[in-house]
Image (cartoon, rainbow over all chains, first blue to last red; front, side):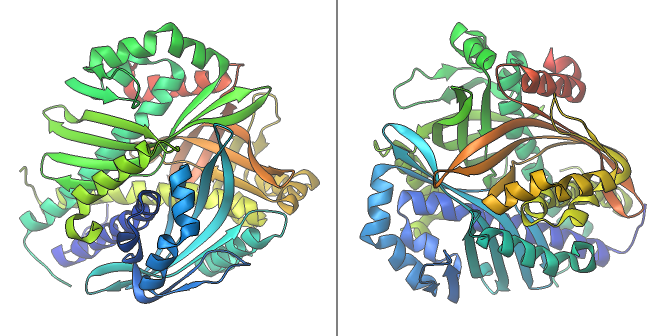
Length: 167
Length: 167
Length: 167
């Protein structure tokens, strides 16, 4: 087993803590969005971060804009009817004070007394470490449907993370 | 990079281990429930823990009661027909020997040869560290449906975890 | 709080890193399969690893065979129509240079403009640490349907992981 100094070990622990903090950040979004805690959800983003939530949608620019989007009648009607903004486990790629995370987003709604899968998306998270901790610099969602948008997002992101191995 | 003594670093590692142990505990429930390993599932709870599984249900009191519920004809019929008690990734908030975890529960059943989403719930886990490790002190499930019960559970729990930031 | 030497602490950090590396390995499969990055997906397996993907299917033998399966018309047609190979959070059981992981696999497809749950499976991963890191030695999927195959896979695996506690 490789050993080292306390400083070397501390750097390894720091990487694990970064992964834990990023997981906590991302896993806060869904429950906050479902509960209508719009300010908490917005604060997950950098002030000048962005949320590109669909190939055919208008991205949110900045944490205040994410907050506003979640305060809109559209979102408020969704949560009144019952909805789950589920986020899957993360593939995290750390690079110092930046990170990329990849996961699936499943949004579930009600129809005739049953839940159904409304949107199934590929998600790429670009994250930055700032003084207050990790924040979302950019989130991109693309549907895993016949348009190929989700497939393309996953493909491009894995190519960036894995380089030659993804060829 | 901040440094410190071996004892300080050990405390940071301990926190990461706690998160890992809590994840392992919670991720055991679904497979144990699906497989009918009722005793294993019950042992995840404290002897005097509780499982408040629905707004309109009668909570289980104690690990033996969770075990009994899973031995009931109701549950045994569900697993004979095929069922998946899926648990999503955790938002964990550690506080010494206690912790709160938040996630989604999706229960999937069969209907006419297809799987469908039977129950989609907000879940709050209250956990305690005892001599034998982490155990469930209380689990609360609420449907993310038009009743607003799931929304309320997520909202109240995030308010407790994030304080002012969740206002 | 128990303390120890730097070497003891390093061994604990190593275990957490192993869990992180295994999570990264497994969470790469779905996005790679959905994006058609067949070589990347295949490389997650040992050269002589196996992928037993269904009780009634022919297992893939070796990483090259996983790559070939994903290049087949069958899989390519699935991804052209839109599909999500979602993997749930892991229950990990480390044992030196080997590990077992348990989770759920949900495969979602499109039908008439809506997503639906095509396959819901119990999954057991047998993993090995080799020079290049952790790799899949064997992956086994079994549907959580009325055949009881998924139930049996979860039951047998938990019995192996938890021993007497799973009786």
